[in-house]
Length: 363
Image (cartoon, rainbow, N blue to C red):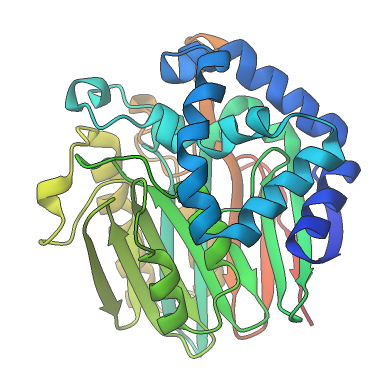
């Protein structure tokens, strides 16, 4: 099995970048929005039309804090010839579907609701690498786009994303790579949407710059970001809307979809056993492989393709559960391994256990 994806090179101002994306993958954007519209009640409990109206409340804060990112979204909408309000719905997916109500996040907690992404960073064997499995709604797996972005200031970015979405993870020419994991906190509010902050993060010039971008004031919610630089330094930032904790790791770090920092666990309302099992499983595989002296890249490939616990929907490599309704199915929609020293990414669309990784470079 090999799920295809589109490769696209864009450049210019944020609006020009967005417009080029919208024009190039218009059909995928239109198809993606139709998918979200059909299944939005299953995803988030509200109609797509209501979600469009709810998104508007977040825009004043987003425009004030991140005008360039908003302009990129506006450019995408113009290029794809769709209303901006429709494009906002998938880009505010966490705000719309990841509630602060503890009763709504009980098991089974779906990957699309933030229960299934896994990030692993390591420094070993003279290499520093960051791997990430992006788990989201299964209807997005055939709409992936590998973006090569060059901004006005010369920053280059490699990022895989669904055609409807601003890229939430990636690697840039400053040697910064970042993977994100959705978290559930008790303090979600109207503010700057998380996916816009993640796009903003992709232009960070250093770990300190990345930290500042992630801790933007007036966040609508939070998430986890595992960031690595070309020197092999690992930085993990757990954030909620109103609080945050930063962890600097020595040579390895693993994160899934619940708060682990002592200062943040009080905000955690996730009840998923899957995220905790994946954290333990990925950590054990990483420690065992490093103890054996495994090649770092091959070790990360094995971890991201692991199926331990698949029967309980807790495996690191996620596959759709065909027994649940179409609108509730989730899976690993993309898997990435970034090398910030070499400025490369190896990426596949869909579960990495059965899809070939493709190699791309910023050099």
